[in-house]
Image 1 (cartoon, rainbow, N blue to C red):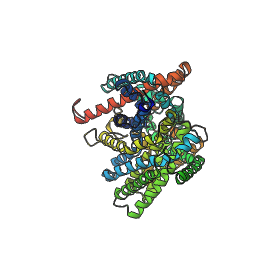
Image 2: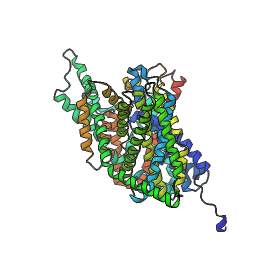
Image 3: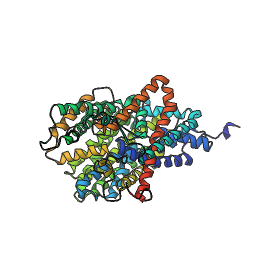
Image 4: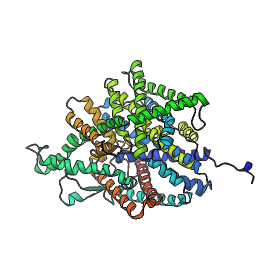
Amino acid sequence: MSASTVRPYPELSVVGVALGTVQGVVMTASFVYIALKLGFGLGGSTVAAILGFVALRGVLRRKSIVENNINQTVASGINTASSGVVFTLPALMLLSVSDPTLSDFPVGPLIFSAIAGSLMGIVLIIPLRKQMVEFERLKFPSGVAVATLLKSPGEGVSQGVILVSGAAIAAGLTLLVNFGLVPEELDVGHVASLPPWLPFALYISAANFGAGLLSGRGGLPFALGGVLAWWVISPIAVQMGWVPPHAAMPPAEVPGWQAGEIYSQMLRPLGIGMLIGGALAGVVSAFPAVAGAMKSLQAAAKLAREQGSSPDELSPTVLGGSAAASLVMLFLAAYFSSDDVGVGTAVIIAIVGALWLALAGIIVAQATGATDISPLSGLALIAVTLMFFITGGNVTAAVLIGVAVCIATSQCADMMQDLKTGHLVGSKPREQQLAQLILCWIGPIIAIGVLFLLWNAPGDGTPGFGPQSTACLEQTQFCLAAPQAGALQGMIEALQSSDAAVDKYLGGAVMGGALSIFPIGGIAVLVGLAMYLPFSITLAYGVGNVVAMGLERGLGRDFIGRKLVPFAAGLIVGEALTQLTWNVVQTGGSLLGGGQ
């Protein structure tokens, strides 16, 4: 065959985009559930790349690595909205339990805000690609891992089999727990007669264990944060008499009451403060990255003036038009979020939100590039705080704009990870950017829809997730604690309340800032998060960390990438999809007689 008749490998193809879209929708739906349950989001690039090999190479006999890269770019770009929505919007729902006036928030402005954030996060980070990927050569560990996977096609089908096996195991375990054949917790502390304020229990969850396996050593700060909270601070608080029981309280009820007081009055505000302190410290430490990004923007503008737009990137016209469109949507979201928000306030919200969004996006991309850990939730807390004061205490408007900021920063990190992968496998950046830009509206709509489904799942007017849901009050396997949203809820209540535990928030902020001196990206965020998660989840996650570290030491990093990563991803996807399907069927009333 002559050179003129050789067909290039397909890249931005209908098949690749369609497959990525389907995977992105499924992952978004399942990962919304996981984020409500575990308190952190998950990326979908690795899962999408493995399944892409199974579908593209194994079924359709297509051999293009760059086409599979488009598939995983689209899938992860859609899925990344799940974290942005779950970390913010549920706080408004949880607040509505005690304040019914917040339950009737407008859905239209919410969707406008979510799509605006998704669009703006993509267009603001694209000009920094050369600076972060080619000039600074940041590691972006997840991006490198996916690139390594894409460049080893011989492993693709076998890794797909491993992923499906992990999913099958997770589905089986989830059903056993749901039907009550396996307990949802292995409570060693109860057997050993330990008091509730010194818990020792392991949460039976394939997804939680799988997340720990994927994180390995990098997840240890999260697990150690739970140890600090419940095995150090909690017993000290009891022994020092910081939580004295009421004189009339029956002795048998004292330990449980003390555990509840330690959580609500001490650990929770400390954790929120650590999130905010760690995020603020990240802003300060990221100033060099901001300066480098500005130089990159200036260099890109100069190149555009001298030579026209680079063929490697989307044109400045497209980026500028998209940024303007997202700014308009942000304004509309703010203006229609509440009758109390006027035109002037909406303009200020849109401008301040866009500026903070740009700064937060750079911070998240830089932190992700260096460590693979993102201080996303802490930055979202700061965004909502800013909007709370700008709007004069309008909770609905503040949270709706917070949704945009959180989704945008998620997109910044994901887009740069995907561009790093593309750089390593020889993809055209413009193809990846165009695919993600065109489909950026899908993820927010799916995530919001699933969130409403889960919130209304009981069918009796009680909340479907959060501490006040029936499942969490009864401590059943259906409990979706929504810890990230709980932190945001607590912060908003602190801003509204004159008797908030200010000393705990300030103390936590100081601790978070101090922890930031350690060369571990996002450590304060991880430790703070662990302080208001159920310790059984944190401890079981830590077991996954330790197992992954042991396997890496004994079998090497190659085994981790080729075998453990797809198996752990299967555990996560398998449980998420099984539990989500269970909830859908329960909501429809066709299984076990109705709601949970």
